[in-house]
Image 1 (cartoon, rainbow, N blue to C red):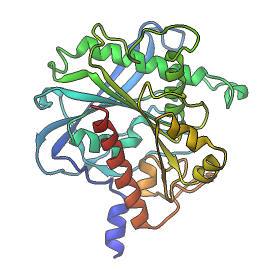
Image 2 (image 1 turned 90 degrees about the horizontal axis):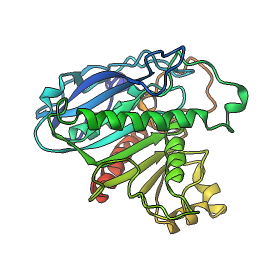
Image 3 (image 1 turned 180 degrees about the vertical axis):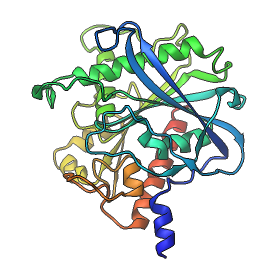
Length: 328
């Protein structure tokens, strides 16, 4: 029993789709955001998970983004199921896109449990590193009040999408469907998506925009947002864009008592609370449940090993279902 438990502890969950998973990493530079720190433009590291030919899911060492501003979350020495590969190995067909946006103090590569699973089902998944070790520390008043970090996330997403439009023909050989995009965010990432969403829903004037992301042809565009443990910005009171809120168990009682849950569902949003989950459950750390080297205000997950496994299985299934239900 001990050997089985130790094996699970250091290995990410097996992807559930039929495709083997490749990884390509790129360092983008947003030339519109130059400063003394980034004279060539803001650095935006990304990691692309993509489906290759069908086959068994072999185990590989996890590729970790070492330039991330991690705070209390240390790099995980775990095994995953994706391997370094050239995008020329991307299988045929047009693949929808999913962008994953990390929480504070977390590396973009710490959502492999979800990125690998989606890629195994045929999605092109792009994780974006928003916070870097080289970033200057912000003032105390940023915490809980400022939108500066959220603006950085939004601008990074917009730049990455413009890069995808420029490279879809050559780098992706036309196998990427930029009219079908799912946006996933955890904590900081999800908060930023909500702020961006509200930026596009202008209540004071007629708004002719039909999508979050700009395209020359907006006909038949499908977009949706998947928000894991958002805490800072309000949700829209209409269902113009499909929203799925994945929330920790601790939020359910309060949100039902205050009418927040009723408001979210009345607006047409999908809401799920997950037994045993906390704010920091929605990342790889919670799956492998490493021994903590620092004091955190909460556990990675409150529950048994089997309950923890069931939680991650449910999250992955629920995310896939929501994407499919919305045409992505």
